[in-house]
Image (cartoon, rainbow, N blue to C red; front, side, top):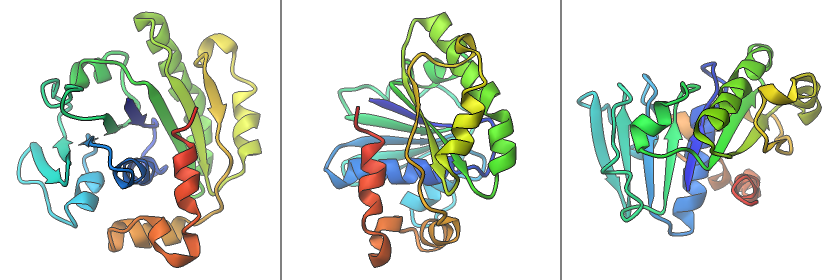
Length: 218
């Protein structure tokens, strides 16, 4: 399964979501190719415990999996071959219609679009543009990915208010809004970007493993 964590805007929770989705897959023993296309290399740094990538395309082995920093969004089709990994998790800003095909040689199966509390207004304002990209991707490639909008610390209703106004032709055919998660941005920031831990590793938030797991279920 190719899982895309994306949004047009920065700071909305793409890497937070990618880290925790990858964590769920790794926790159950799946092999995962983690691809970080963000300039900040935060996904890379989480799994390397703070190491700085040494070149524009760098790789690091994580148990039976691998993380690649791919700043220039170049093709890694050989590494992404399904014979090597069960899943691919891609952390990237909202891609052009052929970007994922160029990088991975295939289209995404699942697209996760986070919106967190700190960037709520900007992210909601630009959500229609992000969804339109996926709609155009479907039309061009014939693919039909499941698209899930993930409210991280905002209400699901605030997302629904925006999505309900988008014309059907301008959003993906298979699009839903996940249940809202409570606003834990500070806690997640501390765990993920300071201690390189999953939020569910903090005793008070162990139940959040199931929240992220549910995003992977049909």
